Length: 395
Image (tube, rainbow, N blue to C red; front, side):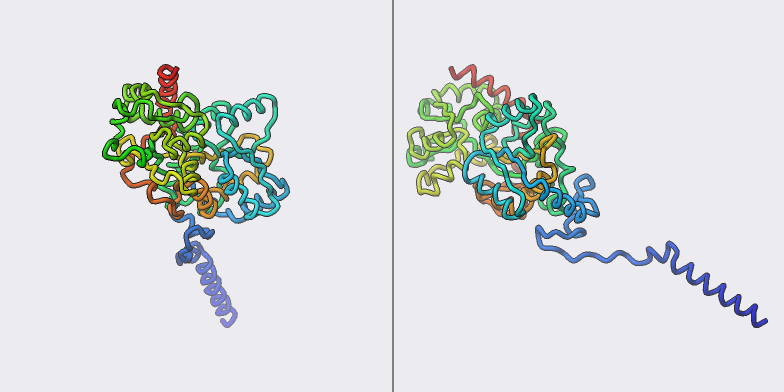
C-alpha cells in the first residue's frame, strides 16, 4: 500500500508539471509593453507600433541593421547622384560623420544632366551609382528603363517606417503610381510665382489671374519651362489647376526665359524682372540670407493654384545593380531619419514630410492643402502637355 501511494503522488506531480508548461500557461500573461520612446529613438515596440503592415520594420531589424552596416563598411563607399549646390553637398556628406569609414562619392547636378548620363552608362554595361536624389519627374524616365529598384526592401530602421512620423503616412511620399520607386521625403508648399514687392505693390498685383493682364507684359521671368525642371513643373501645375487657356495667355506675356536657376532668382530679387515663375526657393534663400530681396514674396500663396505640394530635389531612388548595395541601404535609412532630414531642411529652406522635423512655417503643409500635384506620376501628363504648349508659344 505504501508503494501504491508513492505512484499516486508521482502521477499527480507529473500532471501539475504538464499543466504549468502547456499552451494555456504560455499565454496566460500579456507581453510587457515597452516604455514610450522619444521621437526618432530606435526602439522596436514603440517605434513600430503605428507602422502599417506593409511598411513595418521586421522583428529582427537590429540584427539586420548590424549585418548591413558591417557589410557597408567593407564596401567603404556610397555613390550618390544628388542636387547641385554647396548647401546640398554639406547635407549629404554629413553622412560620413554619422558613419565613419563609409565615404560619400557625390556628383551634384540637375536631373536633366545626370539622368541621360546614368542611362547612357547603363546601356554600355556600366553600373556606377547606388542612390539618386533629384526631382521626381526624372524617376519617370528611370522606372521604364529598369534603372531603379523598389525602395522599401532597403528600409530597416523602425523610426523611418513609422507612419505617424510622416505627413499623410509614409506611402504618401511616393511619387510613382506603384508606390515603390521614387520617395519624395520633402513636402512643402512650392509657390508658383514670386513678386518683388519693392517694385510691384500688392495693391496692383495680388492674384494669379491678374498675371495675364497687360501691365505685366515683359515683366515676367520664367525658369526654362520647355525642359524637365521646376519651370516645366510649374507650367504643368498651372495647366492642371487653371487650364490650358490660362497657361497659353501667361506664356504669351513676353516672358523672359532663363536656364540658370540662380540667375533667375537674381533677376527677381534685383527687380530687373520683378515677377518670377518657378523661382527656386533655395536660390532665393541664398540672396535673402545676404540681405537682398527680403521683400520678394509668394503671389496668392493660398489660392488654388498659388502653390503645390513639392518635394524639390528630394526624390530618393535606390539604383538597380548598385555597386555598393549595403552602403546604399545605410545611406537611405540615414537620409530618411530625423537628423538628416533636419540637415536637408536647412539646405533647401523648405519642409520635410517628417512631422518631427521643424521647417519654415510659411511653407508647411496644412490639412486641406490641394493634394493634386504634377510631381506625382498620376498627374504627370499635365507637365508633359505643358512643355509642348511652352514650345508652341515660346519661339
